[in-house]
Each structure stands twice: as C-alpha cells, then as structure tokens.
Amino acid sequence: QVQLVESGGGLVQAGGSLRLSCAASGRTFSSYVMGWFRRTPGQNRTFVASINENGGSTTYANSVKGRFTVSRDNAENTVYLQMDNLKPEDTARYYCAAGYPSAFYYWGQGTQVTVSA
Image 1 (tube, rainbow, N blue to C red):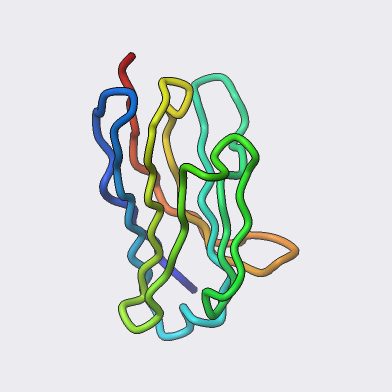
Image 2: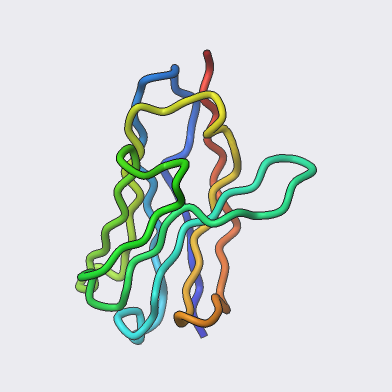
C-alpha cells in the first residue's frame, strides 16, 4: 500500500514556473514507476510524465516535452515535476501515481495548477 500526497500547485502567469512534489509513504517507493497525470473539468485524466524505478528513464507527453522535467529522490520517497514556460492550456489538476509499466495502482488527491494568460 502506498499513499501519495501532492503539493506545489498554485496560480502562475504564462511563461512562469512551478515545481510539484509528491511525497509517498511506505518503504517500497523505489520499486515503483512514478507518474504524473492531469485532468481538466469534463475531461479524462491524461498522461504527463513518468519516471522509472531508479530515475534513469523518463517519458513525457508531447505537449510538455522540453518544458517539464520529472525527477525522483528515492531516499526522500518523493517525486517531482518541474514545470517551466507554463501555458494557459497547462491549467489542470495534477495527480501523482505509483505503479508498474503496465498500470498505475495508487493515486494522490491532486494539486491544482492554474496558468493565467
């Protein structure tokens, strides 16, 4: 069982930056692939980025590639999402997830990111 708590969301102007954090409970954090997803009202949750167990491999959605960076600190049981050059279309609720390459099984409650034009 893993519990995830996101933080770092807020209101930022277009072109600005935010850094999201996701703190995980449990001693098996380093055995999970970690992911970030986002959802806007009325839409399904969509993939943003993921990072493998040791942090050596990352994957990004095309819409955020070159602007967002996912990283993790297994000693601190935390995964991060650095978001630069934010755009209004990045406005969404961002969720952290833990799982395996085939599926994510554990989800946080999310943190709201709002980007003003």
